[in-house]
Amino acid sequence: MARHTRPVPLAAVMALLPQTQCRLCGFDGCRPYAETLVAGNTDVNRCPPGGDVTRLALATLLGREARAWEGERRPAPRVLVAIDPKGCIGCARCLPACPVDAIVGAPGLLHAVVEAECTGCRLCLAPCPVDCFTIHAHEDPPHGPWPDRSQAEARRARLRAYRKARRARTPQRRPSVHADRERKRREIREALEQARRERGWQGAIRNRRIARGE
Ligand code: SF4
Ligand code: SF4
Ligand code: SF4
Image 1 (cartoon, protein in one colour):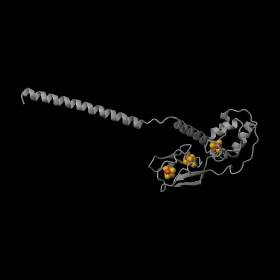
Image 2: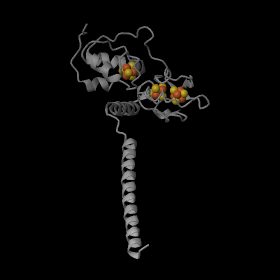
Image 3: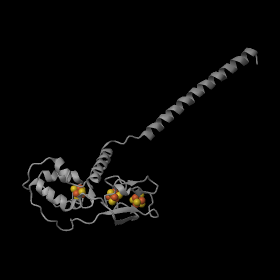
Image 4: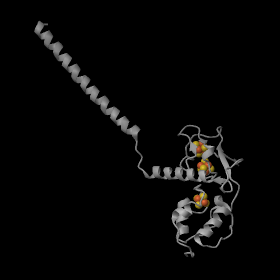
């Protein structure tokens, strides 16, 4: 059921969310939550990473009741995750799970978390078949406007998530396959030319022998 809500631009709501894309709100990222808030179809108390700062600011912006946190959906200290290099088998299953592309690695190689980009959302944990992620407290998280998150981090996470989503939408260009095909065509062309040249030389040698009466 739609809640009474003041009409506000989506951008204003998005600016109040810390952009971790953690899905703790129950939506598939910050934008879907913001869109549903603007439509008046959800409550303002669903973003734990934003803490009370986000909850109260959303209530003020949307002219809605600042409902208290409910159940397990409530703020918690920020964490960081790391990959145990001894355990990682390089299966790359964690890569697509990270909404902000904070994991680096390639199939068959050791993967690692880029600490500066990790929001602590833990979405990478479930896909790992060997449980080689470790979770530890973020000793020195940046502050402001959220308790342990900064505006600069939010901007970066939003951009990284946007880029990742755009990549996923764009059909994969496969330069290596294309290049491979081109290479094969070139090799065939060269082989044919070589064969033609050889046929030409053999013909010339034969003609010379005939001329000498050999
Ligand atoms: S940061 Fe908040 S709004 Fe964004 S996905 Fe997480 S819980 Fe939802
Ligand atoms: S590395 Fe894991 S915990 Fe960190 S942002 Fe990516 S998915 Fe979230
Ligand atoms: S899912 Fe686990 S084992 Fe696979 S690459 Fe990621 S960290 Fe390594």
